[in-house]
Picture 1 (cartoon, helix red, strand yellow):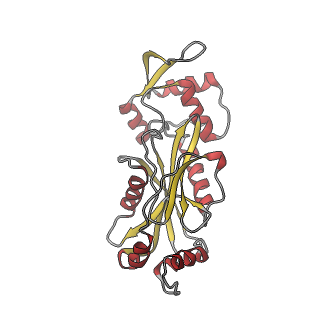
Picture 2: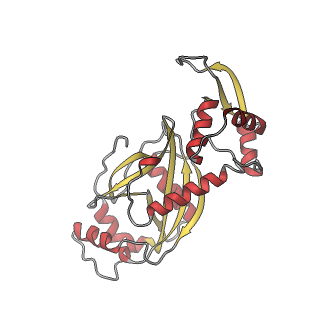
Picture 3: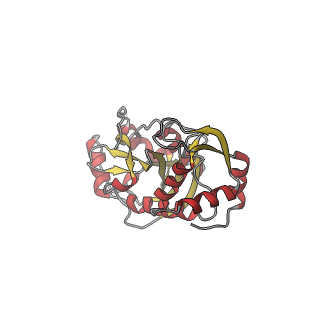
Length: 261
């Protein structure tokens, strides 16, 4: 887990006025992936007044497009714009909301948690996953959270409500994407080595890949440019650096790669 970042308390105002501004019963939840030190990271929020972590999410304004709400959440949590974002699933189990936790949150700011309160109603949430540059993101909490931090995928705690399920579904979707679309442009630095790219794929897939087959397949896609530079500061023979060919990478996102892992 990395450094956390505090935020001022605006939760009372949001809970009191939310019913006037937000679409009833609708929210978005975002699984934000980053890659650092050969580990796939997930951005999580530490909720106020509860010893639980959660995925970044938010409510949808009554006159707001749902995808715009997801973009707004991502920009406010990471400080980044022009993020790779995909809607992947809708979560609508009747009992997915934690009404006990929501009542406690209302009581903590001096509000009466009556049954008709908008915050205690059933919420259907639209899931989005995003791929971001770890080094450029500046994690920031939302109004009902006290901290924001990156977690290693292998160390994710028990999250609030159905957020572990939402995260797992996002990871399954990302793995399926690897079968027909490239991954890496939004997760790796501008220049990277082939072993670093392979490690990213292995981390997402959760399995080892043959080095020679991986390199042959990636070069066969035509989406990489090999640079006339080698990685500095390595003990053994320095590997060449690569960058993504943005035009061909974009075409591969549109047309697919048609090869599996």
